[in-house]
Image (cartoon, rainbow, N blue to C red; front, side):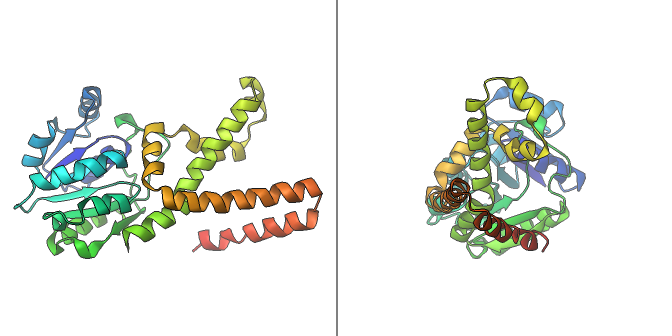
Length: 282
């Protein structure tokens, strides 16, 4: 089949590589607002040609939106207009789902759309960040599957399985709640810690001297693309605010027990936190 990748960066570009590796595509057409990204994606072999959105949709059987979620929200209805009356399939790879779902819930071509969130990525962005095998053995969430046409859903699940992904299903609201707790708060924490350290440590040499693996792993996400994550945060404000309130409550407890010199309460708090290992090992 022919595939259009709208945004051949980390996620879209990696998906393109895995589609090619699995022998699933005849041609991949790339669309990007930045001509330099198209040129680089061509050089790297992520795509076979660049085109306008209209031309890419016209020549493709599957159209994949892999751009920031606020752009997906505005672009998806337009793409669904273009595929009206055809058997073309549209999928997105956005990290939030509810606001996107509401945007197209009454669209006459809603059935041609399959909402995806692959749980994979790195802190890098752009075509150069694309990695072959990024999705192998990774989870991918399909949201609101009952709203997708059966043939569209079956085609997409077949493709996802062929690229090595493990498929789960959720509704959009549950997805956004859970992803706020396990992903979005991690990025906010990383950004916040990086800002705190930069504010306190004026000397870069001091940071490098004292930085250990724990610090590096915690602030790694602070290198993530700011435009991408601002879009994600603003598309999921209800649940991110909920998790932030809970997180700040726990931080306040640490502050309280440390100031009080309360070793027993600190140990109790951290022992309770250690229970996360049971979940991560499942």
